[in-house]
Length: 251
Image 1 (tube, helix red, strand yellow):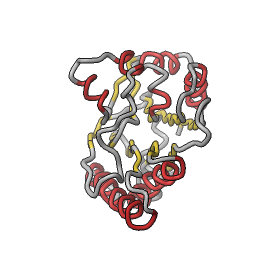
Image 2 (tube, helix red, strand yellow):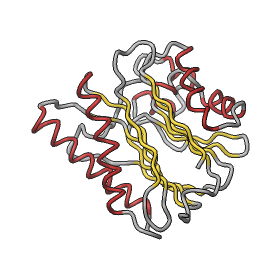
Image 3 (cartoon, rainbow, N blue to C red):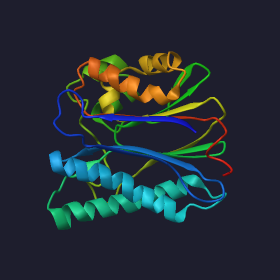
Image 4 (cartoon, rainbow, N blue to C red):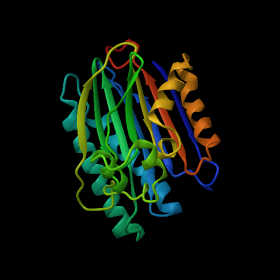
């Protein structure tokens, strides 16, 4: 599997409240699980929230994944379980109401890529020199972009760009965006937090991928670019190349 992961505190924040995972699960077909999360609710609460979002969903997927099953119900159940766990912990145990996290999680098995998403972290697919965005931002500005009121560059500068309309763990129930996409050899999957996308456009992500044939370096280069623009937030980038050696039959 060709992959890279880079996570950085940025140039302004004092702590990194992002969390991520990239792992190949055990089992007959050995699917690949990837996830990024960006915590919210204050310094300590944000760190706890993002870690819980990733680790609780990973635990559920690892426990319940099986050969040949539908991937979207699996991810949906994982997000529901994680949301319940986070909300109960925040309200009943820690006394941190409002603690929450974005979560973008993807499961790649063979020619299938299943994506579950809450918040404003993102998933992209690069194929044949073109970038496709797979997720919509659950934010005030994201809605304005979807309705055509704002363009991408305007949204990156908007003062309400960090105001989320949905996050994992902030309410007893959450609805999760779910979608499945076909993937093929040569595709590149990119997951990232808004520390990248508030600094770097989709066109620039695509250009960086084109100038970086070694995918093991792409995540770090994108983090460097976001930091060069000011690094106003934590930045996490996860890159996976579809090459036929993972996400399918194990060896």
